[in-house]
Image (cartoon, rainbow, N blue to C red; front, side, top):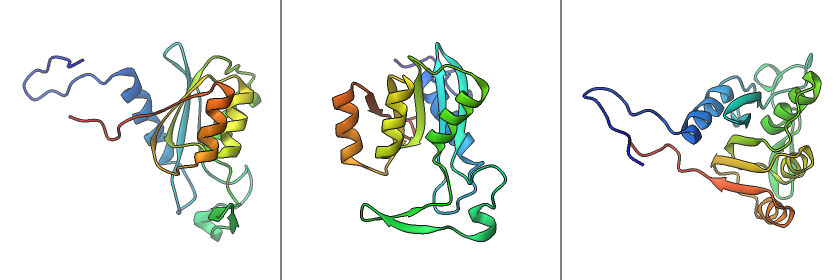
Length: 157
């Protein structure tokens, strides 16, 4: 679907591009210098919650005191931060917002733990842009009926 363009004016983004752009903007709030991740939960083209990776409320952030690194499943992982997907789900629970039958837009593919949380929350689809490939997370999502869609990012002009 190629929208018409006027001279000097950018085409109107698709809904997927719109929400993924917002996820990337949300990621700018990240406080972990290793990787900035953003997530947006959407239902019926309305934003329900957002989340970015960072320390628990009231705790010092990685950009202030450094990352707390451990090797998990053969990868270095910051243990000080909550993941963006987790924070988006926690925000929904904290404010009493149901995310059942919603979609989540993430700047990166969710890890295995996040996939399990997303599935249990009732979210049915995850759209992601970037790496952090986790084959086991993909396998579990498919087995559990969670639709995972990698979007081309950045989108073609």
